[in-house]
Length: 214
Image 1 (tube, rainbow, N blue to C red):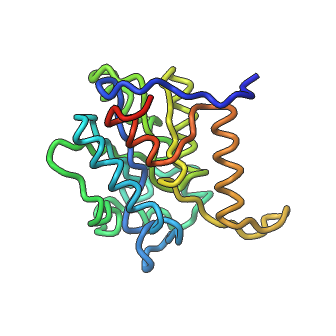
Image 2: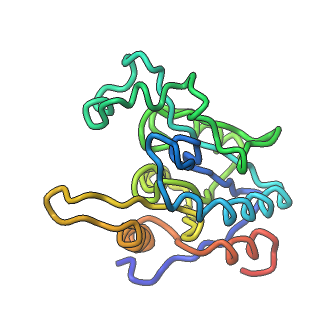
Image 3: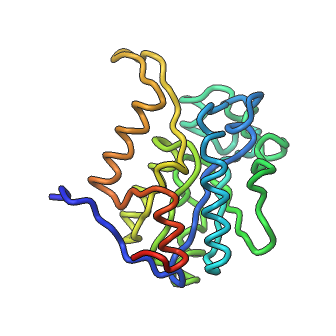
C-alpha cells in the first residue's frame, strides 16, 4: 500500500501555497531557535511564490506565535521552556523574514502549536476559495511542515511537499543517537511521500503551475 509515489494533477485554480514559519526567530542567525538550513530554502520559496502569483494561486503564510503571558501555551510550555518569551506575538522576531515578506493580498495565519490547522481558520480560508490542493514550503520539515501535512491529509486535501523548499533541523542525542539535518530531511520526506502525499522539487512544481508540465 502506497508503494508507488503519488503525483497529483495540479489545477492552479484549486491550489494554495503555504509558507510555514519562515520567521526571523527561526531563519536568522541571531534567532532564538535558528535553523541553519532555513537559508537554503529562501530562493526556492521565492521562485515558487513568483510562479504562484503569476498563476493567481492564493499565498498563505503561517506564523508560530503566542500571547507571551503563558495563558495559551500549555503543553508547549512544558516541552519548550521559554516559549512564551521566544514566540511572543509582540516581538519583531516573530515576523516573516524580509526576503519573503507577504505582499498585499497574501494571507497570514497565526498558530499556537505545530500544525497550521490546529485551532486556526486555515481550513475555512482554503474551503472558501475551493482549494483542494496545498503546496507546503518552509520550516521545520519534520515538525510544523509535517504536522500541517498530516492534518491536511486527514481533511482530504491533496498535499504537495517541496523537497528543496523545506528545511529540517539537526537533533542532539535524546537516547538513540544524534541526527543531522540531512538525515532528518531524508527520513521525513520519505515518510511523507509514502504515507501522506506527493513530494517533489521546486522546478517541477513551478513547471506544473505555469502549465509547462503535467
